Length: 113
Length: 115
Image (cartoon, rainbow over the protein chains, first blue to last red):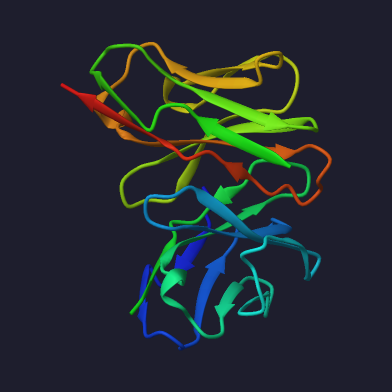
């Protein structure tokens, strides 16, 4: 069964450093998403991406964040200058054109020290 | 805007007992409804969804949920739980009219099944 994959599973970085979180969505999916879950809190929407552009973003997704689909398979989330409060589990998700359910990857745990 | 409230943060239950995890939502527009499960150290897995039609929907692993429009609820039920059902359960909604379909999640309910 096809699945969404994410790398790395755990990333530790120092405050102020740039990080790139990588995702490979399910191959025939057209909508892509990033969510995050701070420890003990709910899963929060960050951004959705369709047709090579951002379709919606949350208030959390400020100028420090960017997304890219550099080729036909990868979908990345970049944080330019990490803050302590960026420490969280980041989930990538994708869905097909005619479906409404999103399929999630296993997540990347980002720890900013 | 939408919001989701899961009324119980933790639900302990004995094996083979029935369980209900409660979910209420608030929205000014029509929504799709979902339940996801997160096993320890894993990602979110779709349990079931309500898009339209019959208000009782069945999902994987013997779970079912009932959409109640008047009470804006979408409670998850299982008649007999197993130890392996121990996990975090998330209720989520998305705006039917939003093509992008972002999900709004509840806080999650930790189901703990004891022998």
